[in-house]
Image 1 (cartoon, rainbow over the protein chains, first blue to last red):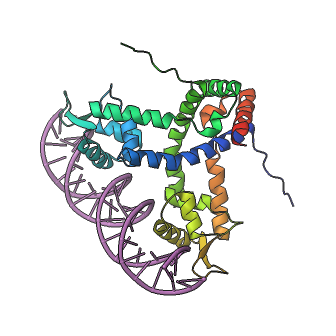
Image 2 (image 1 turned 120 degrees about the vertical axis):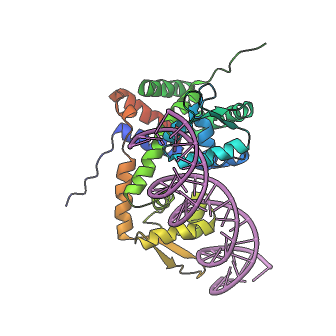
Image 3 (image 1 turned 180 degrees about the horizontal axis):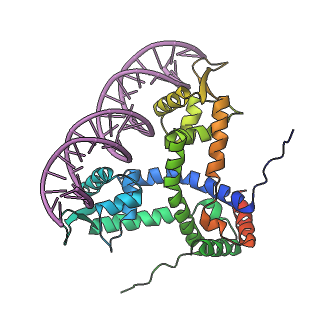
Length: 142
Length: 142
DNA sequence: TATTGTTATACTCTATAACTATA
DNA sequence: TATAGTTATAGAGTATAACAATA
């Protein structure tokens, strides 16, 4: 019998290790969303919207990989909290453009600060490793 | 006025770049779960359970950071598909130990294969970068 | 009395299908 | 006829509170 185990490549190992970090982020995101009075999907939606570039509902649905009908309820929630506004499309009155409000911009930037907090495991790396990690990921992601 | 922008550190940049990879993983996990006839939470639960180490329902709830009452329904779904079994606790008959079935083990390992697939951005890195990435992450995560 | 897991209930997320209003 | 968004509906995930069985 052959008990040989498929040897994992370096990048497979790296990806698996990143998965550990990802796994730890899940409860953190749920907690952060709750602290801001948002559900996780509402947080993702607000994060996805660009205050400088209003987009139609359908564009948000595409970005979130979900159905238009779902975005309706999601935006209802954000709008009722004054974070986002529906604005009629200028050229096509069927479309609703999603505009992030002043309050939305503020919440959005506070969210960004919290979510940007580096996990302790990475923070303990040496300065050289931290730079190397950044440089490699930049090469990978452009 | 002070328009100075807080300079992000190397590790903050690295973490932000990893966030891009994680973000891309979301729809992939939803898709994979669907292909196996599982919902994403069911997939997480099955992934969390260790075939070699049965645990009480409450332990799974703790691992998933959710309520016991939620795990009841989650396990109902996995059990109805023959992936997991409830077994009475040996010493304390209040507890139900969660045992992964043979079929559950098979699905679990196929899931692991799919989820281990490396994102194309990382795959395009040079061999040296791939090794360096792995080594740095090993130093960070043990 | 305290604990494990279930049930009852309510709310949110999600998709499909039918619908409205525009085009 | 086609498209953007909504509404109706249904199913799953989630938590809280009340409950049963056991400790």
